[in-house]
Length: 184
Image (cartoon, rainbow, N blue to C red):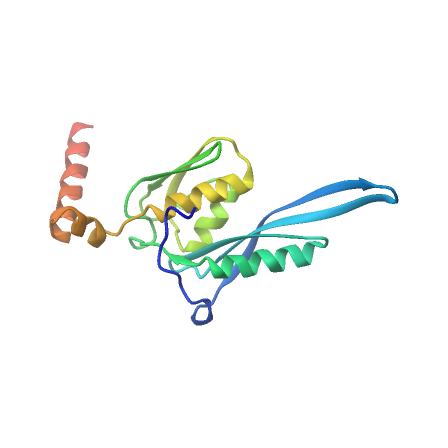
């Protein structure tokens, strides 16, 4: 995920919520019996466009969750929101997991699997359509969702890359919607 860098956010100024997405247990057989290690994946967000993801490993579950939470707070970044949905469709891929995120109308809710839902809820997205493709491993889906969110551009950023105004971009989108409705 280093290819998609965004400006880091200072977590001290935000009212963050933490959600554990996945806890895994690994056992190692030794002379005296079995030794267990735990790994945890945690998502942190403020439900207002800031999201972070962390991974931690330890001999005990609470320590693994604490480490993952610290990592998530260090990796906070902001995403552009269009009211309570995303500004445009985006596709994220990590390993064998792929996630398609599409904006939805107000009142649609979050239509997603548990791993993707936890990321989107804490990011502040309330209306979105998603499709999980390929592998449904929880931590890969979370990473694919994070990658997709990193690819989002606000209408202002998109207009700057194309040397147009924000109104030109938004009017083009509205015209496309009207044309699609008339075809149906």
